[in-house]
Image 1 (spheres, rainbow, N blue to C red):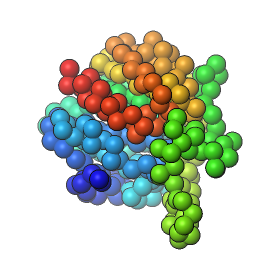
Image 2 (image 1 turned 60 degrees about the vertical axis):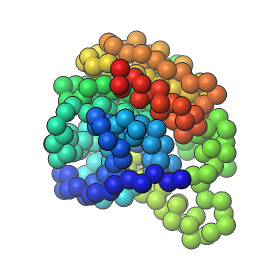
Image 3 (image 1 turned 90 degrees about the vertical axis):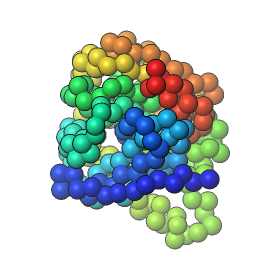
Image 4 (image 1 turned 135 degrees about the vertical axis):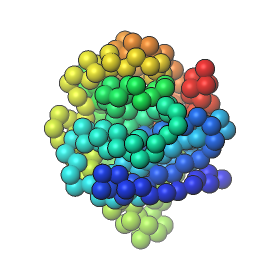
Length: 262
């Protein structure tokens, strides 16, 4: 059953920014990855204990266009402005997935005093040549679900089944729009930052790094690299899960909630 989100659109730095939120309690800001194709229903696993706030990145999902974005720094600035707009009464927790994990890491490094705890789920950003990311353009479209989840059927449910040409065309147009934004974020330095390890040393709040052990996009061999670079990090390796670890293994969100509540 679909999660019943409350929805609002906030004007942030001149960009209409769509925000979905669900639940009650200490606020958790969730930063999505390089697409909104999988939606946000999986965050319901936190909504019994927290108020989960899910913004759509500028230029992605239901947020407005953001032609000014020329790199990750622009997204960091956007989210600093969003925090000012939200004007939360307490320091929120920060959770980021994939590209959103890279974004969360840079955001927490710049403004560590603004967050309570952070969770990075299969984060991008390190660009370590010994543990390379699989470039998505090199993956045949029919094989993409098998790269996103260990059980391809989990990811396949987020893709058109071919029965509705109009839905397939709309899906392709939305992925192209989001891909344009992601391309601009990656244009300066690739899908990461060469000094990200140095930035991570600034994040002094408790951190949890989560990975699926069958991730074919971002290898789980990166997990100890992140934990070594973060001053106060724990790790969570989820068995038989791919990149969409929180979608594939529902208990992942409960375990993340236990960390945030501890």
